[in-house]
Length: 419
RNA sequence: GGGAGGAUUCCCGAGCGGCCAAAGGGGGCAGACUGUAAAUCUGUUGUCUAUGACUACGAUGGUUCGAAUCCAUCUCCUCCCA
Image (cartoon, rainbow, N blue to C red; front, side, top):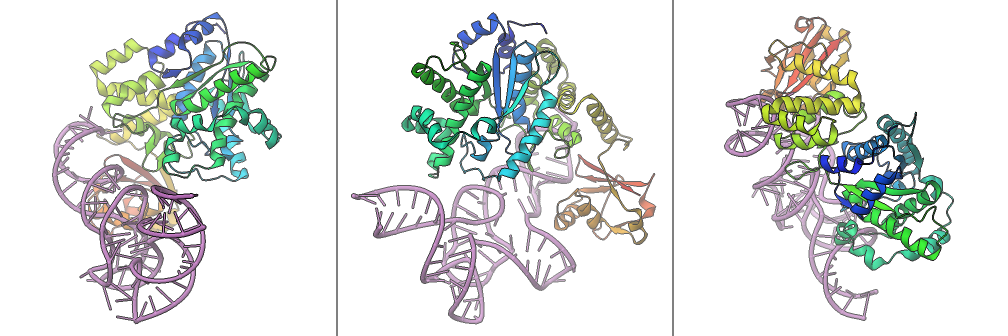
């Protein structure tokens, strides 16, 4: 692997850099030679959402530039819960849940960062070093360096504090994450932590803790090198909302939670103004190319953006399939070959299936009441024809090639295959 | 420890014995217009075997023909005093 001394320029250019503990010094250090850096991800669910992806992109760029990356899955920290930016305490997860999530996230993450070949990423679970750390020792080693006044002033706690419910458990989160950095510094010589801007408080806590601990015991650190924190901006839509939020929660990376089709659709349907950001941050399209295509053809730009992001997350094969499906569905002579589909037993057709039942069963619509409403408002199409009557039944006569095409609104398609 | 206020549907927030599945706003969904965009306008927004039934106003129990509304206990939050 070729070492690239100017990776930071590239990151700055594409908009990945938000805050840094010392940008000039970091730049100088990165130019000198490879370093070890880390990114922490808390397994609060058994998948990653697009928000995680931002930092993972930075991870990839750094790794490609020849730096050694460590991905820390917060098996221990997830049991505590990060209060940063939260107005409610996170629901406590059972240890089993956390363990399950750790495994899932590990598997997913290793698809996006290279863990083999030359300069592989290291994936660790911070439960490894917290599991057997006695409370008293931890408090004496680490807790001693934290001033509660300073902590309370931090943005990270502002919301929780305002809501009045900040617990001691949550206060402990910052100590844990700060210690992660120390541990990695000592064990792996890690000198840079990257993360989202919401992690700024936790990241500087880590670099400060390092300085304080080294001051007490100069031999404790693996090196005398300075350590750095670097954050990427929060990914917001032009309305100022967090990108990747959908009505059913987050936009997930795991295809059993958000299908590649829905994933693509989400990005295709973002506001025009957000397209540029997404192209810069989540694709490798050169900046000049982005500028040109945005100017010439916003729709082509969106197609490219949605395709590239889908490819990045789900792979080329899936992305191509989605594009085929989209072409078929949204063009004049609909071709349903690659449409999202579900299967229903063909035997059910003999008596006819009520359209309402079918809509609810196939999960195209969440409830029968809503399905009724939708039909009454003229939002449901069966094989391209508006369904006028809520009593409409689907029978064998409606099938062509063994399926029917349901459409909810303008852009929700579902192929129902009977077999 | 003492006192005062509060918890309502996805979110904010009105309601303060029947007219309440609950005003208003936000968000969501659908219709029109468009470009599968934005803006705008309209409708809709608990569930179901559907002009009715069931479940819901922090939890539990009670008063009443009838409770989101009154009472008791509990949980959590906010503010003031210590």
